[in-house]
Image 1 (spheres, rainbow over the protein chains, first blue to last red):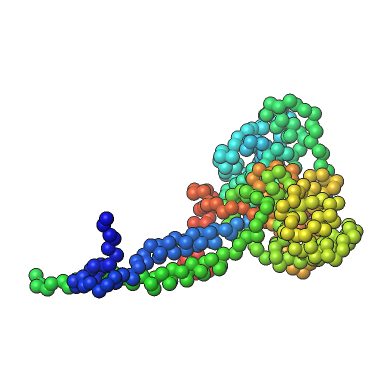
Image 2 (tube, chains in turn brown, cyan):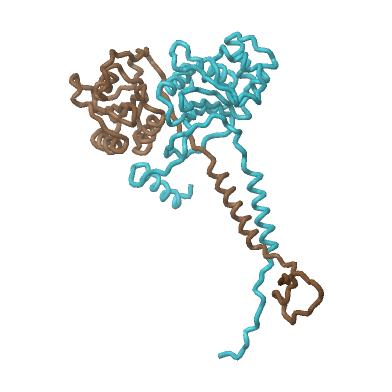
Length: 187
Length: 222
């Protein structure tokens, strides 16, 4: 039927379409190619610069048995935070009361206010936060809590083992069967 | 009104030059992407506001995956040969030279020391496909990472070692504690944890300090 006319009759060219055989236009529009090129460039830019993981520094205190070398922290200035499973956070201020009346529960969102509150009410050299993760807390919880220390500019904090009393208290609070404290007693 | 007939100019631009530049830039970026060694250890690290970049040289890295398995790996320039030689001497494993060379080629170690010899007998390329139980750290009496760290410390004498811990979000605290204990026993008290960068929440103390520091630097011209 109809034949495809491939001759460029005035395709961008001025002048009358002179029949000079089949003169094909050799002009290729390169704009889409450049678009693709820049797209690939932006892709590589983003994948190279963003692949640098950052590192969080952590300094551990030396394990000493001698009591005089251990950091003396005033009891009233201490805030103890315990981490457990499912992102639950327990805390108490000062020393744990025998009837556990100051043992409170919270979550990660509210802990910042609690820390700031305590920080405001305590003298700078007395304020210390003791972080005690239990066996069911996750690494993410620990790192998040250490992050909170940096965010709230807590100068003194320590990462220590949870004591059997506190572990028992958490277990009771979580409502699980009060199993005999099977926590491995670390020296 | 000027009585000039605006001459009709052709608006087609020759894109060849632009295309050349685009491909040059692309080639540059392709060549400068450092391909991370294909890790079989998929670890989702937590976020933190820490702003220092994780070091890439002279690195000894302890990885904790989501099941709490512990692996040990090194950066390319680390003295791996010395590490395995030191461990060989300390624990009298009886490793041959070929096995020790195989160690230096391997990407990471995730087996108890008892299985180390059999692991080193297999070619390093097959290691990523094998199943691992990880280095045992949770048993306080037999924390094998202590021995590894002692060997690492001996090997890195004189070099400023960067000790990194890369833990998965879901790993539990006991594995992390085992790793920290191994560090403490070897007197390695400074280490860094690999995290993803995260913006400082607005309105917090750190945020304000950063603002002040940023504003204070411009006039002080540090």
